[in-house]
Image: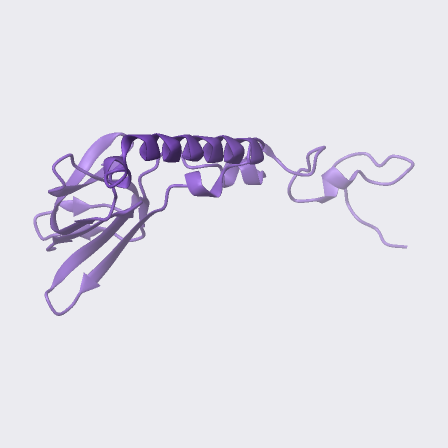
Length: 176
């Protein structure tokens, strides 16, 4: 017979499992913050998120502290903006900017008015068909691709930020 010391009284059916386990169980088996929908929910922004693991601080004490930053590009495509909790934390100049987005006007440029209207109606029917097909889920064509990467260039002794959003690409550079 095995003797154990319990803080609680033992019922006829033995000790309660909650008393023996180090973490108290819940009825459903998982807590609110353990659910995948809580931890891996849809992003609330279309801009890419950069996770800094270490501080990037210069000798004067200025720089980026570790954390999560939403990286945006300004209206003139001249600066990459590091935003944290809605506050601007850093502004980095863009060295190279590229936009491969095609205008909708160019699509119908070489067509006559009647052909352009026919093409436009065909596209509307296709969009409506796709909307009905993916009514319960998300259409893969509507997913916005966004990516940001931070690397250190030892040759030039600077940090490079590679930023992508849909068909836009930008490279920013700053020194420590």
